[in-house]
Image (cartoon, rainbow, N blue to C red; front, top):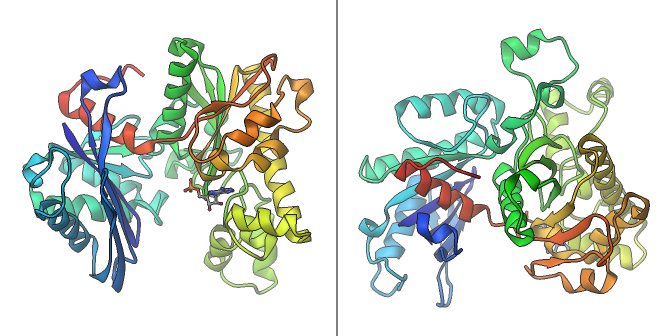
Amino acid sequence: MNVFVLNCGSSSVKFQIINTDLEMFETDSDHRVAKGLIERVGKDDAIISFEADGQSPVKAIEPIHDHREAILRIKKWMEDPATKIDGIHSWDDIHAIGHRVVHGGERFTKSVKIDKDVLAQIEECSDLAPLHNPANLKGIYACYEIFGDRIPQVAIFDTAFHSTMAAESYMYAIPVEYYEKYRVRRYGFHGTSHRYLAYRYRKLAGKPREEVNIITLHLGNGCSAAAIKKGYSVNTSMGLTPLEGLIMGTRSGDIDPAVVEYLFNKGIGSVADIFNILNKKSGMLGVSGLSNDMRDIEKAASQGNRQAELALKMFALRVKKYIGAYLAEMNGADAIIFSAGIGENSALVRKMVCQGLENLGIELDEELNRQAVGGKCLKISKADSQIAVWVIPTNEELLLARDTVRVVRDVPRNW
Ligand code: AMP
């Protein structure tokens, strides 16, 4: 099947076309045939970049006013005779669409085929993720408008993998009525990435699911950790929203909620203004005063910039705290997995995170750590390290595509 995988943000549309099917999963023979991104959707100078496998990328700046126009532009490119995508000549060669949906609330614990009822329930989850779900929905509605019911559409939720957390992990210690009335609890995000990492580790280690006891670290612009026991997520660092947990590019992560009232009383702005600061102006950007990008922070720190050094130390210490917490919660682990932009590329961050964890059984091999950059999949711990450390490049799109196939073919997920 050719699956069109769509990830819609408020002003961006990201896609991949993946050729996959049930029998291809075991041999990992499924593969991406095209990918692309439209940024600045809603503007007259939207940035378009498309690429069919093995061909030079197409780049353009054009007016793209909404998500519908963005998807029509992708369709036009796909159907252009000059574009040569393996096995695809027109939209009729697309067999299913898989949408990334950020928040599935408590309702969605696995991927589902989208119908009117599902749409209404995703709408209901929007107040839990007002920055994300409405954008995901725009993509779904646009596909309905353009393609009608001809192509099955599947929703894959970022929260779903963490739905196996127990109440003691997902409840906040606030009056229980807020959970009962408003479902205020921890949900967790990046679920598709953590699930992919657990799956990939299982294959690399040649273990059955029940023996996968690991800590996965998705360290990108957004960052989260997950504790995975017997193959299931038992805890994760993000909460009701993606603001909780690790320090991120622009998000503070864990913070005393009293800070909000204190800043409010100081006249910094409304509660919404303060949350905007915590979401968009904090984290590595806020502490360094320079950038949200780890590359800039590392460079500045190497040149003696104190704030950048501090930001790096804070980032690493927060990751350590979660590793320690999850090792305690799971009574140890077999492996720690680094992934996403920072986890896959920054030998320095990995070194700082693992430094001083020798007594917990974590020993990095410095040379292997240095080698693990640019999307390499590598074990970077010493041969006798009690807990293995891996760098595994994440591939959320592949799981989105595979889930789409499973749902369309009505085959339950065995992993
Ligand atoms: P992601 O959200 O997974 O695409 O990760 C994006 C982030 O990864 C960027 O903002 C950078 O902070 C970080 N990153 C990418 N490449 C490197 C690198 N070579 N060294 C350090 N950080 C990197």
